[in-house]
Length: 68
Image (cartoon, rainbow, N blue to C red; front, side, top):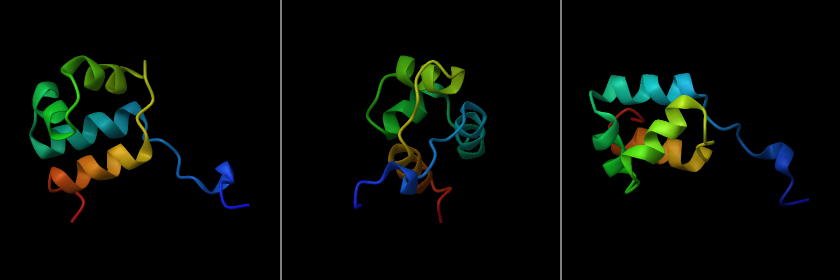
């Protein structure tokens, strides 16, 4: 089945999101701007209140220079 959820990547953990942002040397507001989201959304991802989609994490890593 093409849309089999078992083949989808796991979402990043809040700790991984925090570590990626800190490695990029960005504030939460700056990190949110990289993905065109609010500072509050970024805070919710880091606190585990919301789940970040894996594709957004990959996009952040690439745009923040950590994915190369």
